[in-house]
Structure formats: structure tokens, C-alpha cells
View 1 (cartoon, rainbow, N blue to C red):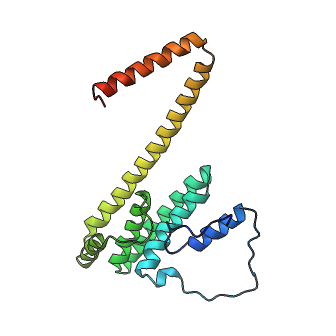
View 2: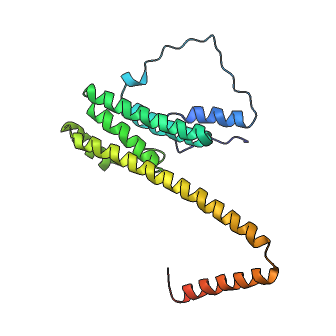
View 3: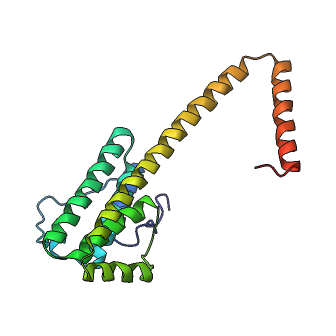
Length: 201
């Protein structure tokens, strides 16, 4: 009741890790058995749709959700660099579809797509590109990832600058005499009223 159910964003992969982290943040003890032994095939050798797509996309979402500050920036950069590296390895192994799918998972994370993958048309295009080994599609997707990262960083930077500007304006505003404050508020209200009446965006 205090932690909530599993996050629907993940749909598959990393949802259990997220749940453990959320329990720990609420003060519960999350325990493990260090003497246990597990034989598990590395995910790289079972490159199915779920493993490639959800494991990559959801790892990025998990880092973004739970890390802060420099750790988040470094973690997301490292995870995306790892995705590009494994995408290249898939190409060298002649697994072109898995390579494109891994890049698509990064793109979908950056575009905030969540839950179960349901774009069958996009999947068909990726399969066709993989069949024809369209390397220019791979380069296009890498370029798209780069541009989306620049856009995200620009938004974050703009948000911080705007937040700093607004906070500074509030401080200055609070030190003004009340008559000056009322005059500024009236001017702003008159402007927005004029804009709405003249349908100016």
C-alpha cells in the first residue's frame, strides 16, 4: 500500500529492480542470499525482441528515474554508449535486425514511449531494413539519437535558466514597494487581456 504496484512504463524487464529500489526508498529492508548460485545465459546470446528492446529502453528509464545530478548524466551517457557499442557488435555478428532494434529502443526512451511496444508498422520497416542491410538507416538512427540527446539537454538547460530567472525576479519583486508591485501586476494583466481579446499567440 505504501510503495505501490509495479510501474506500467516498463511492461517487461527492470520492473522488478525498480520495485526493489522503491521499497528501499520507503525504508524497507531488501534482502539477498549471497550464497545462492545462478547460472544464467548472458542476454547478448539470446537476442530476441524482448531482451534487446525492453532491456535497453527500460534500463535507461530506470537510471533516469532513480539517479540524480552527475550520476544520472554519467549513467545515461554510459548506457547509451553501451547500446551503440552492442548495436555495432550485432552488425558484426550479422544480426542486423537486433542492431536496429537496439537503436530504436534508445530512440523510444528519448521520445518517452512507454509500456508494451505496439508499433507493428515500425517493426515491419525495421525488419525490411535489416533484410536489405540498409546501413544508411543505421547511421540515420544514430544521428537521430544524437539530435534527440541535444534536444533533451537544451530543454534541461532552458528549464534551469528559466527557473533561475523566475526565482531572481521573485526576489526582486518582493523587495519592491507594494504600489510598484500593483502597477506591474496591472500592466501584465492588461497585456494578457489585450492578447486574449485580439487572439494574439
